[in-house]
Picture 1 (cartoon, helix red, strand yellow):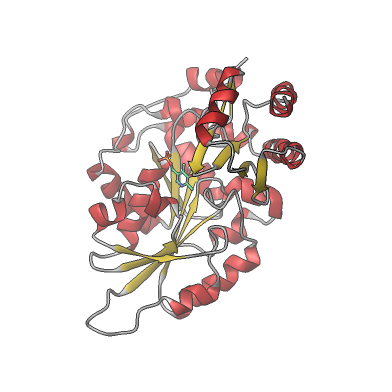
Picture 2 (spheres, rainbow, N blue to C red):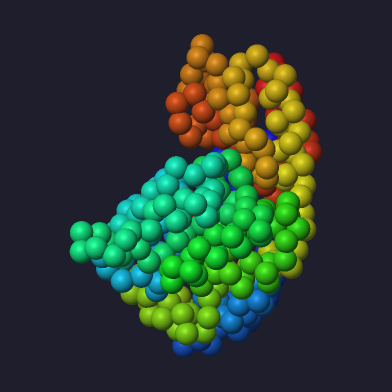
Length: 337
Ligand SMILES: *Cc1c(COP(=O)(O)O)cnc(C)c1O
């Protein structure tokens, strides 16, 4: 038994998902003729009460496409210093859109309305025009922290008062909604664009969907094309996404429960210096100075457990669809040993 806690991207399709993929109806999606992709895009859009969707091979592509749709070169994008769009997309916003990030030291990846107000550039030829605010929910580097609808609504006020655009990197949005109980439709009203990942907690092998107005999705389609993301009979993959939306959302609470159980175990261990609050399915904790990341990860690996180091003395575990109660028991046994 291998226990892989490096990320919630490591899941493999289940039998039910494979059957859905195997029997998918497909067509050429560049001609918008793939019934499975069309169905997935509309289904995801309907969940958030948005007009249209666009299926892309990765969350990086949905985020980068959204930034390209919502900005012009020379403008500035407000985001957290730890945001995926800045930290993990290979400099994409500068390369693809010619925009610069305005980086905020948020609260575990989360911005406040005041953060936005304080960082909008005044009208002055020296400054890049501020044009877009991008939130991440849940925040990956924030250890799975999430926003309530009220918090996002308050930021939305500032965004609209200043005629800015508003993007949500919702790679793990269903993890957030599982905890808040907020309605996805209420969230959908607030943003110009939302990126939703199907291959993280939801367990599909590939893909993210970008949600927006019909007009913005029309623009996004041309951008997806120039990024090389115009796919043909990708409905086999989209069918896995439909299956994921139908079957794998309500079970996310199990991942959160297991993360809490790991947290409880870590609190008892002498080699753990501190643990970031565990809000969803991500655990980030610090090791005491006498044990290095490499030593710790090597010991875990010797017991068939994989984890990731995210900074000096800092380890991350992510729970997911392929991490079950037997694995939880084994993990806790090994950690205690
Ligand atoms: C994983 C992730 C993405 C997208 O990643 P891809 O690997 O390109 O699909 C975007 N945002 C966040 C917060 C993520 O964790």
